[in-house]
Amino acid sequence: MSLIVQKYGGTSVADVEHLKNVARKVAEWKKKTDHLVVVLSAMAGETNVLLRLAHEACDNPDEREMDMLLSSGERVTIPLLAMILKSRGIKAISLTGRQSGIFTDGMHTRARIKTIKTDSIKKYLDDDYVVVVAGFQGYSEENDAVTTLGRGGSDTTAVALAVALGADRCEIYTDVDGVYTTDPRVVPSARRLHHVSYEEMLEMSGLGAKVLQIRSVEFAAKFGMPILVKSSFQDGPGTWVKAEDAHMEKVLVASVVYDKAQAKLTIAGVPDSPGIAAKIFGAIAGNGINVDMIIQNISVHGLTDISLTVPTADAKKTLDRLEAVKEEINAREVLTDGNIGKVSVVGVGMRSHPGVAAKMFSMLADAGISLQMISTSEIKISCIINEEDVDRAVRMLHEGFELGKE
Ligand code: ASP
Ligand code: MG
Image (cartoon, rainbow, N blue to C red; front, side, top):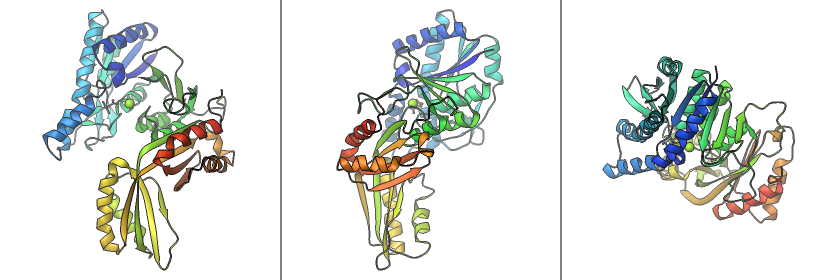
């Protein structure tokens, strides 16, 4: 029996017209596969509207109520699609996260899926229903409350359901026709990739590529679930995200990724003694702040500087924490620089080919772009540069590594 899980993102369900387009696609697919589960996002922009309402309502919205509110976006799209399908004579039913058996931990607004009880969905599938599931939401038994899975969480709903149901694949329908060598808005010659390995996609999502929520890729990688990223607006082969196999050409660099929403904070004049870094990072940890890069300078006369980068959204919170710890450890000052960006190259081929870093640095040097911080993993190299240099750097690297060529 064939089973496909499809997910349609916000722009694909932006209004009733778009939902009718999705219904047409679903009807076509229902002819080609035995079982079909469709996961939907909220209408484009809707989750942002709800977030804004919450922050208008009060300064620090209660997280349980926030999840109750945010999960309502998907509650609108699923019954609408199910209605349209039924009106066209297709057996369909919409289910909330809880009705779909998606159980999470109690971490509101960023819950993790613990188990999926598939009995109910399976019953409907056996009865030949198209099952339309609300993405992004689950249910926490410990809190007896609706939870959400973090922004972009519908991808994770879809992949997790595909795994739990033993689907053949998980298809993600979005407003782009696949995963690109870089952002086509910055580099018009960017090319759609035929396939990307889980590892590359994990790095790319972590570095700011918005196509897939990183947790969905982690899920897929862990259980070997193939993902196919496609456009819901035009036909095409899309991009496969799957395990690296012998047939995959091991390109040196698969893509150039950038992220401008980064800030650098420096705590300067820190007395250099054992345990200082632990104190500083201890003060930041546990506040949901995602520290990315860290650099500690060599100490001069017993004083050192420590710099770190965080997402712009966490900059204020981080600054407050560092100001507090500054007093405690007798550091001189805390500096913030929001005018930075991160540009990275990713590719599994780097593992076996040295010299990519040298090539990247010399391309940036030739362009007169200076590097503030560098970090590497086995398959990626990231540099922090001035924000206004980011677009130029992306274009240089895309061209230098010849990513526009087949
Ligand atoms: N609607 C949610 C969001 O905007 C979840 C999703 O679309 O994946 O983040
Ligand atoms: Mg998304």
